Image (cartoon, rainbow over all chains, first blue to last red; front, side, top):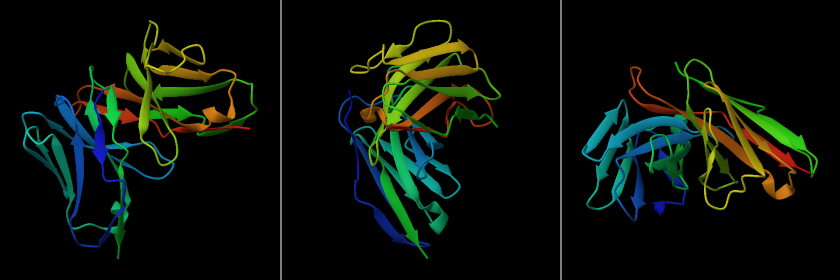
Length: 112
Length: 118
């Protein structure tokens, strides 16, 4: 199976700045890659999906890029707010729709 | 919008007993659902694929006789942890793919169920 790597260290960022998170994978490029938000003790919440033929996807203050050559996805939160504080998970599709393999997640802490 | 509900949110049980966790898709049908387990500070690990009307498919290393999955209807999958032991204490999460809608294909996750075995 894939090895999915996300920064294990928490990302501390000041309100208003842009947070950038990295997701690297090791083997085959998946058909699509997803990003989720997870708050403590809660299930993941879907944020964005980017397909292998898409370079960039945006949703409000969120932006995701997907570079299949580098085997990397970047997740950006622009104009970050304290409410954005959470753990962000990268997930790759495996052999069937809906079946995901997750990275360990990166915790983001936005301070006022 | 589409919602996936899990019950119970948390449960404490004695070692050796069995616990059932339910996963429901509230306003859409899900022929397939997925069960994950998450230990503290770790990633979600896929345990099994729940298939409506047929047997579940388990990931390598997951004991099918210990984690019984039943997908009785198009909106309900259950995970039963049999003869639970303290090492089974974890956060169990289900998901259901939803095709269509204004957001396109989306995977909805339940809120999770905390299991503590004492």
